[in-house]
Image 1 (cartoon, rainbow over the protein chains, first blue to last red):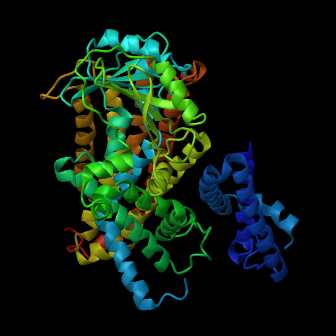
Image 2: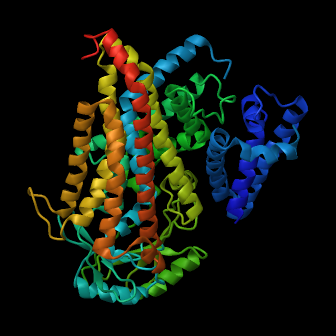
Image 3: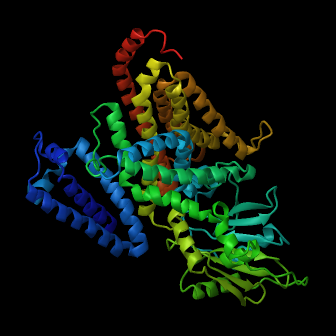
Length: 103
Length: 523
């Protein structure tokens, strides 16, 4: 269960970081050549980084320092690929994040 | 990565391309076999049906020792590896055979010997393939893999430097764009997002074999004395025979004492040397399943009295080496981590394959126009290396389910015949790729799907273990392996179909090209 929570946190973290980038942002809101506002970019940077850090903490708590560190690194890879494929095949799925984290 | 100067990037780009081209095929084989090795014991269960037992509690070691004595009265040296979640049998190694010892699988409850049809399986064929390619001569296989480990580090570093927009394209995958664009996106996406994995795996692999690849490290420290080095690093303990008979004491008591010394660490291996002699020694080794580190902890007992003769634990540098080895070997029982290693390994395979395809697709037209053989040669090698080894692996599994237990042909025994099936089919895929060129990608992918179904069906027919029955009786490894094989087949079928669609679109253009330059395209 904690493993799933750590995956969710890193997925959300990477998704927020991706939404700072104009191509991904416009794919999600389905408006061509749209850019996120500087305020939203700043906010998503902090929220995204915090989510990644949170996922590390969850891994540590769940598996201890050594297993936790390995788990985190591999979960980052897995969640990164998940965000990548979400953005290319189902970008609309990330809309709730946009609303929550501001445009 | 904006700081890297253009000349540097240009030269590293050439390095990346050439090293990738020359060693990509071997690297794919190492990645593929390494990825499968993550589940080598599960593959063993699939290939040795009599050993598919539901996990059973730990045996009485003294009862096990009596069973061993009945099997091989008077054996001077023997060992037993205790059942674990991944290998549920009691594995007894007795003297005999061409290699000096033979492994027997025993039921951990009844001690009845199980008789799987002879096979190397996952731990005996796939795992050694990963690190020595089954080339024994002059340790050449080990050295090639070591070279590939170095090359992998070089490819990773150069890949990062030549990637112009590493952060901007971090999550970029554009499947709708031209094939070269989407192939490069996949190549960099699989590489960059798992960058720590792609650095740590080759590096830790090199560190595992440090005494072979970097002999200076230990020769300098121990004045080249191998025995002293072995004593210090492996803690091996020996003493001469007393040449007087003696009875074996209680192994259960020794195991309890070892557990007490390890503060809860469990024993996994018991080895008796000079059995029956008054100076006989019992070695109890500590299990690797609970920590990252693959410890070398051992306690040596006097076989008769059960008194502790020596206790070994790695010194700090040795312990660090064992920790790094543990990261690579994945012997801990953490299922989520195990699946993530598997996924990262597969991503590495995709990275190498897309690297090849990108190179081919971006040069195909140019080489055809200029009548160069580069694309034709690389295409044949890459196809055989990528899809070919997958087809060959399925042939290996199918041969395992088809060959009768007492098979003998061409002067080869059964386990050699399984390997012959692998190598013969692999060779055929290279020939096929050379003949069919671009179409071979699609055709070999199209062959993987039915072969996967055949492998799973044969497992069902020959053992009765269709996936949900295996799952139901506690043999999750077999059910999961069937599932992964079917998934592999499905992915290959999708790739084959998509290739078919793309090739159909590309054909008119290729024809137009051929008409424009009628003579030069035929090499």
